[in-house]
Amino acid sequence: MFDANGGSILTVSDVSVHFGGLLALDRVTFNVARGSRHGILGPNGAGKTTLFNVITGFVSTQAGIVRLNRNDISALSPHRRARLGLVRTFQITTLFKDLTVLENALLGALVRLGHHRNALRAARDDSQAIALAYEQLEQLHLDHLADMPVQQVSYGEQRQLEIAVSLALDPQVLLLDEPTAGLSHAETHAVIDLIRNLPQSLTVVIIEHDLEVVFQLADHLTVLHYGRRIADGLTQEVREDPVVREVYLGTD
Ligand SMILES: Nc1ncnc2c1ncn2[C@@H]1O[C@H](COP(=O)(O)OP(=O)(O)OP(=O)(O)O)[C@@H](O)[C@H]1O
Ligand SMILES: [Mg+2]
Image (cartoon, rainbow, N blue to C red; front, side, top):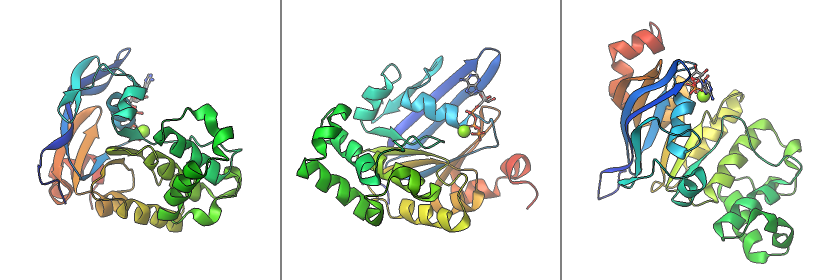
């Protein structure tokens, strides 16, 4: 499952973030192995999204270092980090609701082909960009929705499309912030299948509230509580960890 070279693709070392008097992340350290499915768990307000914001550059580190492929990226803009292959989805969908599913995928394809997003108008006639966008939708079994305006497809399909658009950016590391939040049981399963079928070479870091989902998807877990890392290890080990069971899993 892991790259033959082993090692970490992403490392977070001693990262702290304050919002005024609130310590949202308190010297958090963890490594993400190349090719792994790495889950981030923790109760509401534990600091999970802040951690993604720090990794992707939307919040700057006040202390600590973020490295991608051993390079310190802590000072780079979100845009530069995305170009290096660090791509995220947001907790709330960020699609262009008035555009069709294909046009949203096309925007991702354009970025991949090095065009500016303003080029959408031209891209509607660009067969290479359209083919790439279509291919992306096909791979995720969303091609039947291509011509639908995004606002007319279900919320579950929007979440899947969001992953498709992110994939069009050709990430090395894909960061998913609660990809199944607000979804029905059936929609959740569709998203789990989609994530399961992502290429093994892609590293996926996934914030997820639903323990059933995270236990199915993740081979490795990092657990946060009040901004602190309280557990980190193989999913099976973390599941059994008495501290995690007490603060997060309850009594089961
Ligand atoms: N921009 C901000 N300004 C001030 N406080 C913030 C900001 N962003 C997050 N916080 C606070 O930092 C803490 C961690 O928030 P964060 O969103 O990272 O938690 P989370 O683990 O993602 O929670 P959830 O499960 O609810 O999504 C919370 O107490 C939150 O209110
Ligand atoms: Mg969050």
